[in-house]
Image (tube, rainbow, N blue to C red; front, side):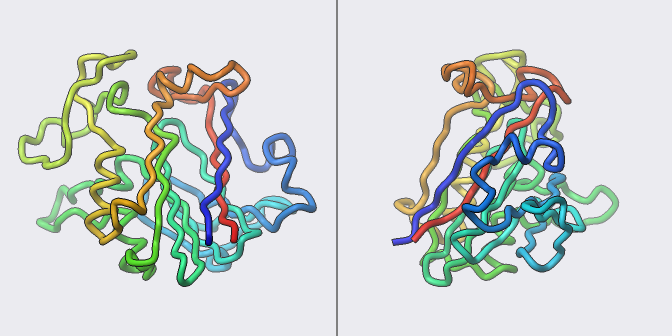
Length: 246
């Protein structure tokens, strides 16, 4: 049986620059697995397969020439790395085709902005793109969701959807942290809803809903994770390494 695997790293002082910190971050890479695929995320709904837009960064890291918030590989020795600061991450394994994807599921990746100068609808979320444009089968896929901020700390007053009474996704109030009392969205529930919408079975969705802003700090200091909401911008970064095994 194919299994989703992952490791999550945090840096409280300085960003993970894949060209600067690869030796420190992934000492297991050298000689023990194939290349690490690092899509250049920037809140898009684009997903690229390794080999489509490769941009070598180092001996071990392959980036993308264009921005993409998701990557696809097809071999167990190929890893995908995503860098985040509060955004949840999603890994999806199609067990029949043995294709594996990792997605950066920030708010604008899963809820696309409505075009302001046209009557066009929202674009598809990065999750819908995976199962339509990239032909992952919901009948044979399973998903892992985790490593993001919870509704307890997110605070989403800065998004226009927070003022939209017709917004259909779960809206509440932040109960902890610097955004306590602000309107908040439950990103984990939105992601789960979208996975169910495309046809995944509930039993095939695993959610690790610890919060990068508050609950993650329960870990020892050596395992502390960065939160942009908690710590402010440009002070740190997290890195998630995803792969699958047979």
